[in-house]
Length: 69
Length: 135
Image 1 (cartoon, rainbow over the protein chains, first blue to last red):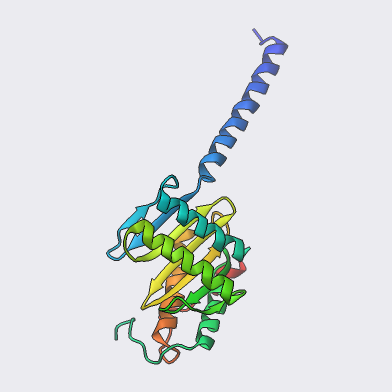
Image 2: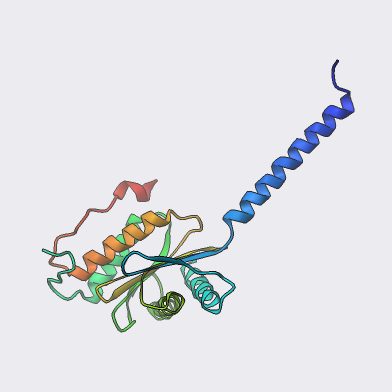
């Protein structure tokens, strides 16, 4: 039995809404700020933005990006 | 011969060449500065004073975050990305596009800084990828 016309419309709208929310979720993840520093010996440290040192690093990086713009 | 061997001390003119070389190599680069061991800007894409201050700030913040002197740093924010590498007392700090190919950018920065630190008389370690900048 074919689906009722209004059901097909609701399914289509739901599919578009799912696509949009997945896109926004991916965009939010990839745009999240990050910082990595490497020291002698090859050790790499990730710096969280909620620490004092991390905040200072992000502020300094923003200054570099501003000048480079 | 070790690649850290300096044949002749590099000059400010050599730093200008290195900045231009990195700009030609890296398509995602917006600008950069080369700092000497005292933190003074030897050459930059724009105003050396402003670039020098920004570069020193980034290196100091990276050192503080790591708890020891860093050899490389990579920070991504909403508007772009900042990179820093150190070699033989010199430092190269760069600003790039958001979602730049970070490993390539750091590889290019290291190659340029290493050649620069070796001095003008030393042969380059590796030739630039001239085709990548065009793509």
